[in-house]
Length: 362
Image (cartoon, rainbow, N blue to C red; front, side, top):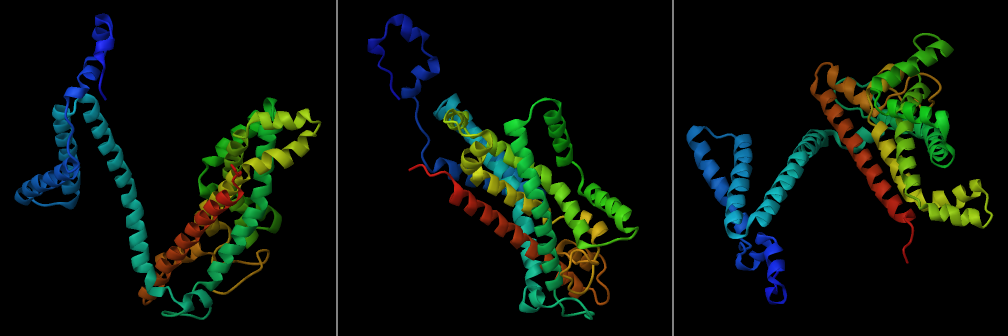
């Protein structure tokens, strides 16, 4: 950037930022400066730790700190304060992003490494009925997870979407404020509280000790409804009011405007939020521990008896492995891997739905 000071008055030139006036006199670091500074920082920190005692954590943290300080000083001398500050902030943001990825990669690598041992056809086609030690599978738990999650979604999606429509399109006064308050409270409740609520409810209806899949679905719906309401509410709010006003100006009733204009415009975000809500509850363990329990056989009836689910199956397989413990622990890791794969698929489905139903711009 260059300044044509010949066309400016002396007063205007004097008022220009001194650093801005000196930009054309400053140099620029070459492209290899950043990787070179990183390599130099790694060498310096590595040599220091080789003398005092090497540690991977200290090496990474020390390299980042030395790299950030060194590149900032170098850029400050060559390029000026603004460019140096920009480089420093870029390093901090990138480092924070990489630090956030470390737990994710650690979990994925650990679960895949241990779970691949039993990732075979038998795991997906056999239950644990009559199995002691090696063998068996989690077919009954996979089916139970799908059934209970589908029931929870069937109860939660209509309630959540209709509640969000009421809050955005009709809600005014104390009732709307009360609903919003309770939705905020439900968003932050621990999952075990939802499980205890379902246990208390079905104990009153069916008696103490009742364990059935529908109770687990009710517990999961308590956790899922506030997520659906919040995501749907935010999607409805971003629909321009001009679309509503244009429809109403043509004499279209409000309910028809919501169905034909508001919901189709925001359906991509609504579908994506619903899918994420399903992915959020599918791996819950605490509510299913107290409401559904565990069984070794296949039960496809959620209204009669206990049903196995993947989270509870993994929990019991890891905490109560039996003798010998190795086969049961392997099944626990594989169940965790299957859960991660299901959640990943649900997120991919959410992205596909968002693209499919997104408003066309052409």
